Amino acid sequence: MPTPPPPSQPSSSPSLPSSPSSPSAPLTERQEARRRRILQASARLARRGGFDAVQMREVAETSNVALGTLYRYFPSKVHLLVATMQDQLQHMHETLHKRPPQETEAAARVAETLMRAFRALQREPQLADAMVRALNFADRSVSPEVDTVSRLTTAIILDAMGLEGPPTPEQLSAVRVIEHTWHSALITWLSGRASIAQVKIDIETVCRLIDE
Image 1 (spheres, one colour):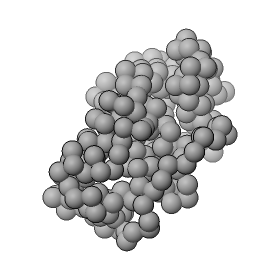
Image 2 (cartoon, rainbow, N blue to C red):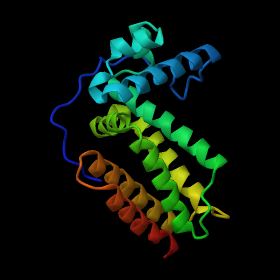
Image 3 (tube, rainbow, N blue to C red):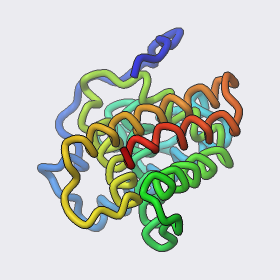
Image 4 (cartoon, one colour):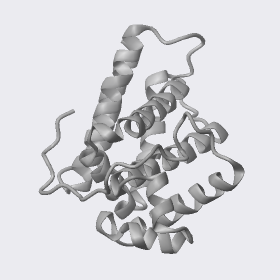
């Protein structure tokens, strides 16, 4: 989904050895606790002041980790904020498992689910803006984190569909289009170019692809 290029690229740190959060290096309990503190600090700062408020030195101080340690986990602010979005989506996914959509039709269930996720982001616009800006800034070095965000979004949609078996290629194609539309709707709302009512209409319209 093409989006307008940002006015400037954020700075990032030099390349570093693989982080403790790499899939090839499972986290110890202590590392997981440290990573959790970092993500919580990132989210708190973003809620307070958006993308610009998330400064790596302040994240390190707030989460009580050394700056060098922070960069081992997250080589740049973009890596950190995309990981923050992963964390937020995972929380949404867990919430939806506890309170699944109640609509009868698959398209309506997906639309309800995505609007619930959208409203959760709507309650924290600074955080939402910071995470979306990070996704737009992300280059190839952030591909694994961006792919995880995409997989989580896909999993949320597929769960809402309530399929009895594996999705067909046509269903997966529809899910990708829905995912792009949801992301685009979030961007246009954050930029003030779409109302909540318009977002709801767009999401409900694209979700009808599921029932076709």
